[in-house]
Amino acid sequence: TTAPVTVAVTGAAGQIGYSLLPRIASGAMLGPDTPVRLRLLEVPAARAAAEGVAMELDDCAFGLLAGVEVGDDAATAFEGADVALLVGSRPRTRGMERKDLIAANGAIFTAQGRALADHADDDVRVVVVGNPANTNALIAATHAAGLPARHFSALTRLDHNRAVAQLARRAGVPVTAVRGVTVWGNHSATQYPDLGAATVAGRPAPEVVGDPSEGTGWVAGTFVPAVQQRGAAIIEARGASSAASAASAVVDHVRDWFLGTPEGTWTSMAVVSDGAYGVPEGLVCSFPVTTRGGEWEVVPGLRLDAAARAGLERSVAELEAEREAVRALGLLG
Ligand code: NAI
Image (cartoon, rainbow, N blue to C red; front, top):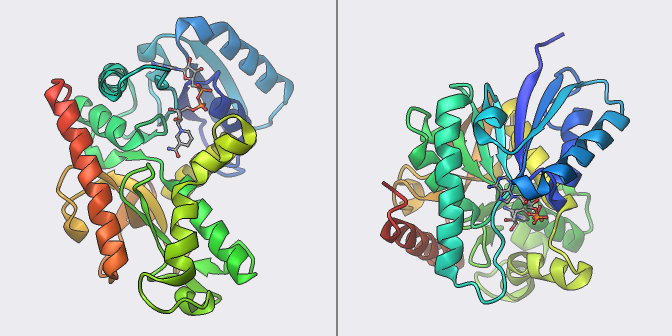
C-alpha cells in the first residue's frame, strides 16, 4: 500500500466542500489504492460546521480515509500538504463593489499563497476554485515564493464538462464519445467553449451537430451561450450555485492532473500562460492541456476559427483587467 496523500481543502463547510470531501475520501480523486489524509480549513465562524462535516466523514467509514483534521489556521492546515484545494473565498454580497470583492479575496489568497510556500510540501499541487478563480490563483502563485507557478491552477473543468455534456446531448451520444473540446480564457461568462477541434465518435463535431460553418447556427446561437450562462441557469433553477457538479469537476481536474488525461484527447485547465496562443505571459488562463504525473502541457497547434479567436481575446482582455485591478491594489507585490 502507498503512503497517505495529504489533501487540504479550504471552505470545507461550504456547499462545494460538502459534496467534495466524501468524493475525495472515497478514492474518486486519487484512485482506489491511495489513502488520503484530509485537512479541513475554515474561517473561525464556520469551524463548528466543518467539525460536523468531519463527523460525517467518520460516519462514512471510508477505507481509504487515514485521518481528518479541522482548523482555522492556514499554516497548520497546509503543513506538509501534497494537494491544496482552495475552495473558500469571500462571496460578493449586496452592495459590494467589484473592487471590494477583489480586495477581500486578494487578502485571502495572498495569505494562503504565503502559507503554502512556508508549510506545504515543496511539490504541492494547488487548485483554486473560489472566485474570481483565475485571478485568485495568480495572486496565490505570486505570493508562494519558491513554489513553481506551474503547480498552481484554477478550475475551468466544470465549464469543460458542461461543454462536453451539451455536445453529447445534442449529438445523441454518450459523453465518452466526445473528444477535443476546449474552454479558453477566464472562468466567467466571457469564457469561450470551442468545438473547432472537437470530435464526436471520431467525426468533426461541427459537422455532426449540423453546423459546419463558422459563427452561425447551433454552435454560436445555442451552445456557446448555454455553456457561458450555465452557472446562472443553475442558480435560477436551484436557488443556489453549482456545488455537486463543481465538486465533481475538482475531482476530475486533480485525477487527470496526477493520473493523466486519456490517450487521444485533452482537458481544459487554467494555468499560467507562457505566451501560447497569444495569451500574455503570466496570466492564469484556461487552455487545452494534456496532463500526467502532476505536470501539464498546453496542446500545441490548434487552429482557432474567427469566433474562437475573438472569444479568447475578449476573455483575455477581462483577465488583463482583473490583473490590473489587483496590481493597483498592491496585491502583486
Ligand atoms: P459557500 O459560500 O457555500 O462556501 C464557501 C466557504 O468558504 C464558507 O464556508 C466560508 O466560511 C469559507 N471561507 C471563506 N473564506 C475562507 C478562508 N479565508 N479560509 C477558509 N475558508 C473560507 O460557497 P461554495 O458554493 O462552496 O463555493 C465556493 C467558491 O467556489 C465560491 O467562490 C464560488 O463562486 C466558487 N465556484 C467556483 C466554480 C468554478 O468552476 N471555478 C464553480 C462553482 C463555485
